[in-house]
Length: 112
Length: 131
Length: 212
Image (cartoon, rainbow over all chains, first blue to last red):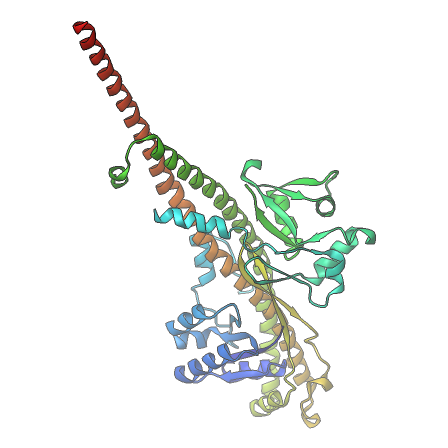
């Protein structure tokens, strides 16, 4: 199946992805509007992947995770660094792996 | 006992992801979006690159005999971490990927080999739980 | 143990409990195999994530840098406007594959990179800086799509692993020991009853002999 991509982030980040040909974008300014837009993207049907900046995710807060947990397989959701390269300390995948496999797996990249 | 219901449920769904009917490499290659239907009614797509890899490992005359996805049969009685590939052409093609000599209609593979198979054939192999 | 109270020690019950134990042991062996396979799948995926994440982070950084340079040279407003005019025809193909009952995505990306003309922003804006920013962002998008597939696969595998592990532990530490206890208990009671019976018969025999 063919799908579109959506991006949520600050003005510059969104402009960058627009340049790459991404069709659906939302410039994040406040929590309520972004949450509403996220809902729209999640239920849109044509959108297969949502890229959202870590910063926007943090602004939305726990509601983001609750909503993403509820969705089915699609659309895929990936958190990305914004223009400042911001990535939070806490890495959920890392935590889940530590809990399940019981080992620390180094996933941080050298470039950071 | 509640736990017992859970085991029965778990055993029941252990193989629910297997296809109702497998598809030959030849027909998979001829389809635009090759896929099989799982027993629990879901679609499982086969990646084109993997089909192409397989087609290079077998002479064209045998494309009609290779059934996909190939089963990696995990059987506790083989010992932990060992699995069996059943079928002459399935065993042959997996043997080629691993650089292992094969003859006959089955091949025993071990965990590090399974890891290699799964990396190369993520959609054209499936785990089967046998007992 | 509460379970004992409800067990009536007879041959029938012994057979039932033994069957349950066999089922639990079979379930344990198979789920353990599944657990091992899940761990292997997860490690395979994590290895791929490591590589993909490093690539995505670096490429995205290049994209953002090219974008900053573009904004500094052409102006933020002009860059944003050119971005708004860009043709938005990026499509990805997502299909589903199944790993032991877990549905995970397989994403295929066609030609993301375009030439300057295909991008469609108006020609008076055309600048090699804009083209560079667009190209770097196209490349970044491509690796992010691959990373998304991998991360979602890893999450799904890890969640299933967590569930399977709980089941395996419940079997190993609760159900199987409890059933073994029950088998032992019933066998012991049956033995006792047999001994009691034996003594009773001996006593009856003795009484009968005395009378005789």
